[in-house]
Length: 363
Image 1 (cartoon, one colour):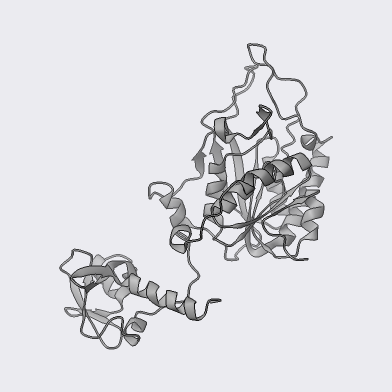
Image 2 (cartoon, rainbow, N blue to C red; image 1 turned 30 degrees about the vertical axis):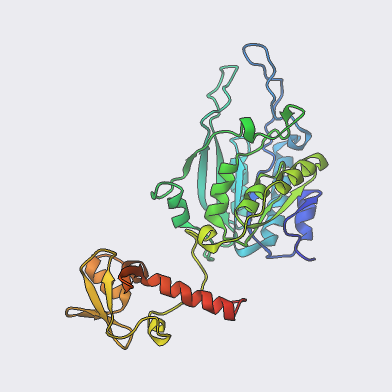
């Protein structure tokens, strides 16, 4: 079967997953039924009824029935996930511990759990428990020890250049962000786009395939489209499919610019050694490089691709490390001069890569 990218499959999650090719998907985000076990209507103190989750898709007769459902869809999801792929599953205290156990039993390797801390949680109107102010996301890889995508620098960039923590403070989806039909919520458990922005930013690259087996109102597809990822949605409710299609189709497809969408993503581009800049004439032996845009520290380029500053000789990385007394990526710290202006040598490396892509567009 050809992979139906950027498409919503109408049907059962397990059957649809089993129809897809093996090892074909880079990332899965799953927002399965939580099995909330609501037994009574819930009323506010002013006697208005709470629009709680009482849909048929969240009804299970027992924990055993829910566990069998979870085993079936997680097994099917693992089959389609690439060996290097990862999965995110979101839930509440009603189901997430059972999901976590089953993930481990099926051979997934848990990487993190994330707390989505809601800034505007629904109160516990009966006053008999703490207000449920968070949900939990489990992030797991298909196979322990395989390489997987984690865009550490992208997440730092979203967090004021500080390492992002496992507690994410994000408001519920309300107001203009909440999709409504005839004045009512289109979907009871619509997730905020900001939550999916972090998931997709952290765990995929542009062009990757992101699958959501419980697509609902299409938040995963909407964010994936905005971020130039491919997506596949599975949804059994035709009314949700129509809502999701209209939502995603309304998003304009912007031109892809790798400088914009690959920011903070580890690139799988061809390695360009510094010596190639000498071989193609971008730089010449005897020219100076400057260690910083305004620094007086400089080095001389040697014919063998090393540089020399005083008595120190070595690669752009080794000399940079010696000067900083810390690990150094020389491409980011050494500058050359052109028309009296200093520019990063990384600009020359980018030019070579662009030329390589022009000659070999499939590389």
